[in-house]
Amino acid sequence: MYNETNLDKIEVNAEPPIEEPARQYYFMAKCREWVREFERINGRRPSFFTQTFGCQMNARDSEKLSGILETVGYQNTESEQADFVIYNTCTVRDNANQRVYGRLGVLNRYKKSNPQMKVALCGCMMQEPTIIEKLKKSYPFIDLIFGTHNIYKFAELLYTSFETEGMLIDIWEDTDKIVEDLPVERKYPFKSGINIMFGCNNFCSYCIVPYVRGRERSREPREIIREIERLVADGVVEVMLLGQNVNSYGKNLDEPITFAQLLQEVEKIEGLQRIRFMTSHPKDLSDDLIAVMKQSKKICRHLHLPLQSGSTRILQQMNRRYTREQYIELADRIRREIPDIAITTDIIVGFPGETPEDLEETIDMVRRVKYDNAFTFIYSKRTGTPAAAMENQVPKEQVKEGFDRLLKVVQDTAREQIAKYQGQVMEALIEEAMEEKHSAEEKHSMEERHSMEERHSMEERHSPENNVTMVTGRLSNNTIVHLPGDASLIGKIVPVSLDECHGFYYIGHICR
Ligand code: SAH
Ligand code: SF4
Ligand code: F3S
Image (tube, rainbow, N blue to C red; front, side, top):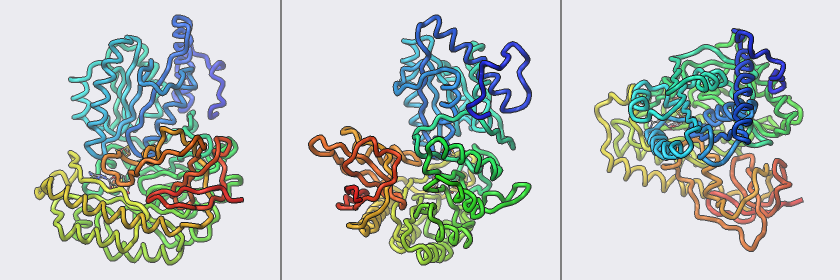
C-alpha cells in the first residue's frame, strides 16, 4: 500500500471498510471527489497550511497530515490565508498554548474574509478537556478538532467535517492502536523523523505528555525497518528515530527487543548514512547502547540526555528516578567511551520547592558535564500533574534570576565546547541554502524541538556578504556550519573545514 494505493480504484459508493488503513484510503478517495468538485466550481485546487507548535513527534504528525491532504488533492501553501488551516498543537508549557490562542484570533479574521475557509486543531492541547470547553465557548468558528490518539483517522474526520455544519469534535482518551502505511509528505527530501514508539509511561511529576500522549507503545521493528528502507529508496540519507524515551523501546512487544538491537538493525540498511535518535532517558540508558554507538559508522556523535535538575532532592520530587551522582557517572562513562560525542540536555528552572542551592547544583552540573548545548525552560504548571498540586511554587522573580544565571553558564560552556573543533575537517550534511533573510538565528529556530521563548541558542545575525551563496550543514555532533555553496549540495554529505567559530555555529568551506 503506502502512497501507491490508487485512489481511483476505490469504490466510493460502497460501505466504508472496517479495517485500517483501508478505511482511511476509502475516505481519502471520498475527499478527493470533494476536492475535484471544489476545483470544478472555483477553477483552482484548494490550498492548505499546517503549523506545528510542538516537538519532533508533533512535526512528524504534521507530515502525516500533509501527506493525506496532498494525496486527496490539496495544494500546500506558506500562507495562513488558505482554504484549510490546521494547527498541530503542543501543551508541554503554557507559552505553547498561548501562541495557539494568539494565532486563532488572526485566523478568525481571515475566515471572515474567506467563508470557504476551514480551520482545524489537533495535537496534544486537544487532549485536555478544559481546553475543549474554552474553544467551544470562545472560538466557535473552528470546524474540526481531534486529538493525538485518532490522528490516523484524519481522512475520515476531514470528510465528515465536509458533511457537517458547525464544529466537529472527536477526542479519544487513549488507544493501543498503531496504524501503519498511511501517506506522509516529508518536509526535507533527504532526512526524516521515524516514530519508533508512541506515548510515555514515566510520569515525571511536572510533565503533561503521559496524559496527552497515552501509554507507551512500540512499533514492530520490521515496520520501522521497512519504513526506513522505503525512505532511503526515496532519497533519505539521515533518519531520526523518535520516542519520548527511546531507551525503553521494545520492552512490551510480543517479541521484546532492545533499543540497542534496533539500532544495529537500522545500521544494516544500505544507503542510509546517518542515524540520530531522540530522546534518551538517563535512567534507562544501557551499556549496550553505548557499545553500539561506539562501534557504529552511522550513529551520529550526539546524545540528548535530559538532566532536568542537578539536585538529587529535586530529581526525586520530579520522579526522574536517577540521582545527581548516577547522572555524572553515566555522562563520564559516555564521554570516556565515545570522546568525540556531543552531549546536550534539557533543564527546568523553578520546579516547586527549588532553592537557590538546588539551582547551584544544576549550574555545577553544567560545568561538570560540559554540555555542548542545553535547552533551558522555566517551570510551567500543568493542570493535572502531581507538581501542579505542590504547595511550594517558586516566586517568579527568583525563577527569572536563577534562569538568567543558568543561561549564562550554559552559553559559556557550549561556546567552549563548540570552539574545540576550530580548524578541524568534519563531514557535514548540507541541509539548506541560506537566503539572505534567513539568518543563523532563524536556522536554529527552524529545527527547534520546543517553543523558542526560553531557548538560549539565539545568536547574533549572520548575513552572508556580497552575494556569495551560502548553504547550511550539520555535523554529526549536531553543530551547524555555514559555508559557501549552492543548492545543488543540499542532501549531500561533504567534508568541511571549520574555519571560524561564531559561538554556536561555524563558518567553513568545503575541503576536498
Ligand atoms: N520525553 C522527553 C521530554 C519531552 S518534553 C524526556 O524525557 O526527555 C521536553 C522537555 O520539556 C523536557 O525534557 C522538560 O525539560 C521540558 N518540560 C516538560 N514539562 C515541563 C513543564 N511543565 N515546565 C517546563 N518545562 C517542561
Ligand atoms: Fe515527560 Fe518524563 Fe515522559 Fe519525558 S519521560 S515525556 S519528561 S513524563
Ligand atoms: Fe508538546 Fe505533545 Fe510534543 S505536549 S512537546 S507536542 S508530545
